[in-house]
Length: 194
Image 1 (cartoon, one colour):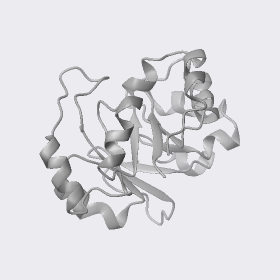
Image 2: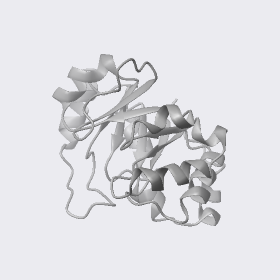
Image 3: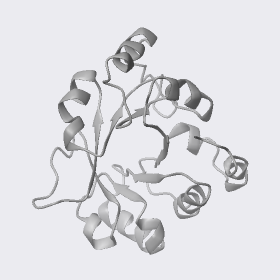
Image 4: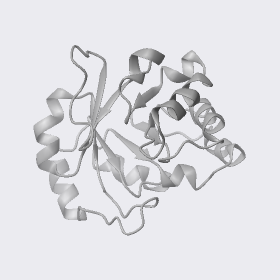
């Protein structure tokens, strides 16, 4: 089963609560709350507006201390947050930008983002780091598997291709936030992502 993951935009926005709740209602597996351009208090206020059920589907990026405070699903590490809190035994995810990183961290995390798989939608000039041949080779060698999530330029239309490469899921920022309204999100509610 392929995971469908949404990643928030970098700044807390008035529409975040409505969009997060709508995405979860439409069947998105989880939300990565990534708000590096907002402070911890803004993120805290956003999380306070969500239900306990909503929060149980959120993985926090920039402020790992909010994990326990709000009963979140897990913590994400990357180049900025390189380690998990001492004694942490919750859900773990990580950003990777090479096949070497995927191989190095796969056993330590529940899943890993591999990016950018395609040219980014949300970050201008952020180009794909992998050729089709690279991806096919990594898939054939078992580097890409159900613990690897494709990120970077991913759209709903690219899901079948990424599934054929054995990715365990997809993560989207631009494709989700370019929709911007829950009315349009509704058209994906009955979409079969399997």
